[in-house]
Structure formats: C-alpha cells, structure tokens
Image 1 (tube, rainbow, N blue to C red):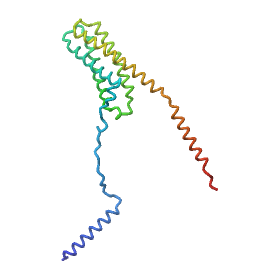
Image 2: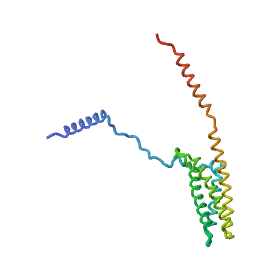
Image 3: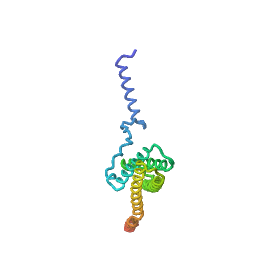
Image 4: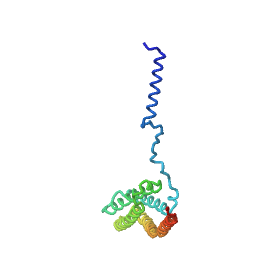
Length: 208
C-alpha cells in the first residue's frame, strides 16, 4: 500500500500537470464581468424640447384635444349624431397620437429608432389633425342642437385647429430650412484633404 507521503506527492504532481495543461490550452476561462444591458439608460426628460415652440404646441394640442373630447362625451342625446361621432373620433385619435409623439420627443425615444423620419411623421400628424379637426368642427357647428356641450366642443375644436395649423407651418419651415442648408463646405474640405495628400505623395523622394 502507498504511504501518505507518496499519495500527497502524486496529488501534487497531478495538480501541477493540470495547471500546466490549462495554461497551455488556448481555451481559457474568461474572468471579465458581464454587464447587464440597460435598455432605458438613455431615456431622460428633455426640458429644452418642452420649452421650445414645438413642445409648447404639442402640450396645447393634447390639452385642447382632451377638453374637446370630454365636452363631446357629455352629450347624452343627439339626432342626428353624425357630427358628434365624427368629432369624437377625431378628438380621441388626435389626443392619442399627439400624446404618444409628445412622450417620444420628451423622453428622447426617437433617438433609439434613427431610421424613422420623425420630423416627417410629426408633420403628417399635424397636417392631418389640422384638416380633420377643422372639418369635424365645421360639421358639428352646422349640425349641433345649440347645447352647451356642443358649442364648447366647437370652440375648442377651432382652437386646437389653430394650434395644429401653427405647428404645421413651423414644421414645414423647419424642413425647408434643413433641406436648403449648403453642403459646399464639406465638399471643399474633402477636396482640400485630397490635394494635401497628393502633395505629400509627390514630395516624397524616390528610392534609387
């Protein structure tokens, strides 16, 4: 039988052999910590957007759309009800879509999806809301029953139409100014860099 010292010697040699083989193996265990991905790390409230013209208009549009929707919902009886239903649909849709866009711009969520043209999306929403709010308010004004709720809904409908119209005008002007920005400096910088690189190549002495 093997003595205790011989057994300990064999164990030590086996441990050293495993350490050497592990060191020479190309597959080494990684000890780097795995950091969890923070999906909501870049989300923050953009106060500058809320203080801008577009942010203020978005808040006004959401509030006025909600007030118009509440006014039209208080009507219990109507005949005919086509104008009421049309205004109800427009005010509810505008409130939801504009509210979602307001949250997206305020929390900088649009930077997470850069392949979407958010300026064009906002322009389409404001232009469509301007048209449909004006149309639904006009229809409700012609087909109302002189009730207080209907008159209030018409007033707030025309007010939110004006807010959406101003927003549409500012959005169109912003897109035109963005598209008309000159790009000549970038081209000149590129040509200047190309010329400088060619000059460096020509200044190098040839090796005989």
